[in-house]
Image (cartoon, rainbow, N blue to C red):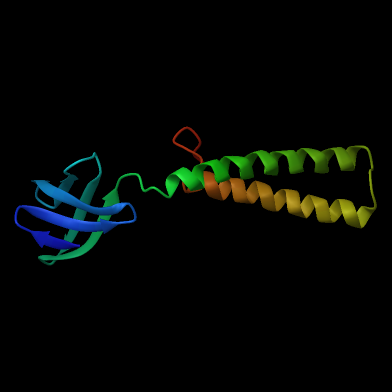
Length: 122
């Protein structure tokens, strides 16, 4: 990130982008809708926050949805295994632990808003 004239230039995964100041400590992407907000402490910039969509999101989101579907299916199969007493006891316990881990992972994805805006935990 470097200042250049009336804005800043930032190297993103998608390439070099320019941002112009629209308010103190708030910059807007010149050819997009992303924003960068700076946090100041004691007259010095302490943090910068990028508010926009990174290209990586297009890879993460479908994988998150697939993980959610598979975790729900695993949990359902674990319930069926217990109700119908399918498999050995140790196998059902192991399968149940995997199912609970899958549900915990879906909660994690939801907590960090990686499933989309409509799916938010807590």
